Length: 212
Image (cartoon, rainbow, N blue to C red; front, side, top):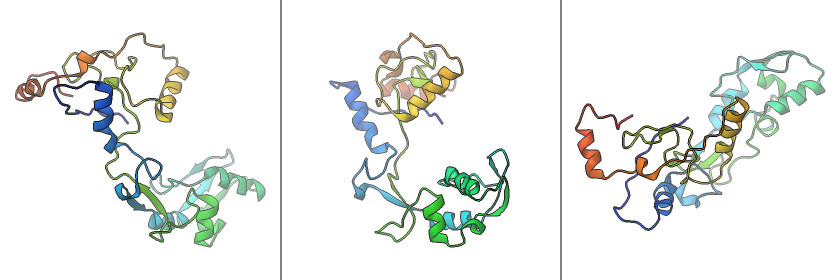
């Protein structure tokens, strides 16, 4: 999912890259490897996992799973389930996950990404940044030129960004697999910066093309 963000910066700065890094850092998606514990909030997944344990699904002969609610199945290790069915020599199955492993704690440990309860809360879940909004960002990016109304090609080469990331690499690999050609244009800083006074005037103009 992509979004456009407007970041307010001081009128004068030495490095646009540094200012954007500083301003956007508190809103990075992440956990204990990225932030101190006091900046994080615990997201309790115990109830969702209990409902997942009791949910019905179908394992098909072609190795796919159907009838599972998407919102419930987050964190379910489908590869471990397939290994279980292969070991049991089952080509298909229809029923509840609780029929495969009746004991809840064992089910969570065997078939989900949650190996143990959190020591501080006693629940299954994750410590995450409650302000987290981005995995990676580019200056311009998909919305290149939107802030000034000078729209430019979306897939230009970013010159200022959050740096390498798995998410960005996945998108680039997917685009290449679909036959997208490399773009030799670069996002221009001037097309992505604007004075606040100018933005205020454009906000008052209902015909302005600067807003998306």
